[in-house]
Length: 93
Image 1 (cartoon, one colour):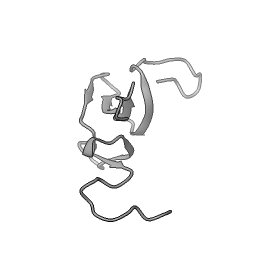
Image 2: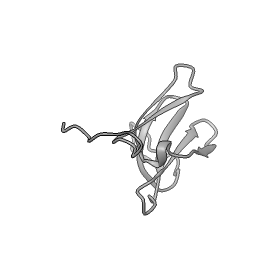
Image 3: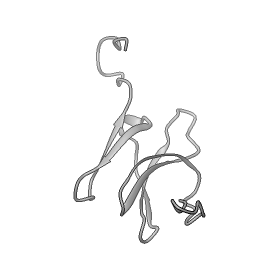
Image 4: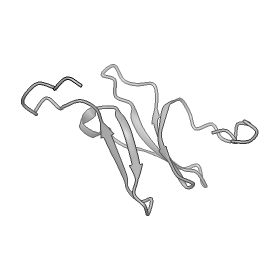
């Protein structure tokens, strides 16, 4: 994490693939490196304490979108693509 005004490093959270979402209290991000299957572990870090927790990826896929609930106690994660148990072809964009 870096300070917005100065660019100074405030806290090193570890190897990150990318940030999914953040609030003034928490940040959801992907910890790297990714596995051979492409899965990256979603992490949630409390920005006040620095405590981080790791979670399983939904459907064993890498999350591409996230949003914290208004109270900040829940996190919704979205993944791209269809799971193999859903019949039919993926429609073109």
